[in-house]
Amino acid sequence: MQESGAWDSLTHMQLIAAIEGDFDIELSADEIVQMTSVAQIKSILRKKAVEVQ
Amino acid sequence: MKLADKGAIVVGGAGSIGQALVASLREKDVRVAVLDKNPESEPVTADAGILYVRTDAADDAEAGAAIATASQWLGKIDVLINCAGLIHSEPLISMVTPSRRRHSVASWETVIRSNLTATFLASLHVAEHMAANRIKGVIVNLSSVSAAGNPGQTAYSAAKAGVEAMTAVWARELGPLGIRVVAIAPGFVDTHSTHAALSEEALKEWKRRTPLGRLGTAQEIASTVLFVLENDFISGCTIRVDGGLVI
Ligand SMILES: NC(=O)c1ccc[n+]([C@@H]2O[C@H](COP(=O)([O-])OP(=O)(O)OC[C@H]3O[C@@H](n4cnc5c(N)ncnc54)[C@H](O)[C@@H]3O)[C@@H](O)[C@H]2O)c1
Image (cartoon, rainbow over all chains, first blue to last red; front, side, top):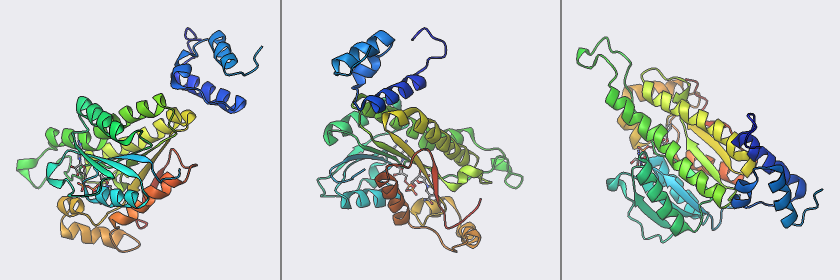
């Protein structure tokens, strides 16, 4: 995701807000910073016991 | 936001509006760290719920250190109120006073620092603290009706228009983290700063142009700040508290 030209901090925060809202979870600042790829997002969500494919 | 036991920083909290604001926050059991550069205006208080930190908030290193001190004392920062400022009147060019023909660059810089840079720096440090600790906090910025472009106030109007623009930007950038950012634009308020910046004649004229026919009070500004803090759906806007005055 970091390589994608359209990706920026604001879009990242909007994605985080959407993930928090949809899964009804709260992410820590460290987790937010680490969420830089789809794989990392999935891995963090799994750790929070969210079912992801 | 429920205010009891929250921690707030009021930059410029030793000023006229700042003092009214600090008193109102204390009435709601908010612990308050006052950051102000003026040692003369340090409030004499026995209130253990107020910490006074002398700092120039327009200096990055000083602002960072003062906010770190405040955050350590408060535990966490839930609220930042940017109330530092300097009201200044000076025409761009003067056709009547040859000795002061052009707007001074020094006064431009002083006014921009107090009103715009101090707001930028305090918000920068506090937003970082709120984001790192996932605090769904509130930042309130003091603007002015002069942001619309008040003749005779180039630097002050520019600084306050900048404050309103930053408010809109930050509400969008920080909103996804649950942080709200709001500006309040007072009209002419009955404070020392107003009387120092404007002649009594000019003030009389402003009162005449204000539909409610009077100056506002610092208490009326403070109560608006409390309203903004307590209402969790206000963000990104500028609330005018001006007796109906249109600049
Ligand atoms: N009084 C009015 O009529 C009026 C109207 C519209 C907007 N405002 C705004 O409301 C705010 C408060 O106004 P006030 O009337 O209480 O003014 P004030 O001059 O009484 O208070 C301002 C305070 O900010 C402090 N300050 C200035 N620069 C600073 C810096 N770099 N670092 C730390 N502290 C700094 C000053 O020491 C002072 O204590 C200001 O932003 C002002 O522009 C006031």
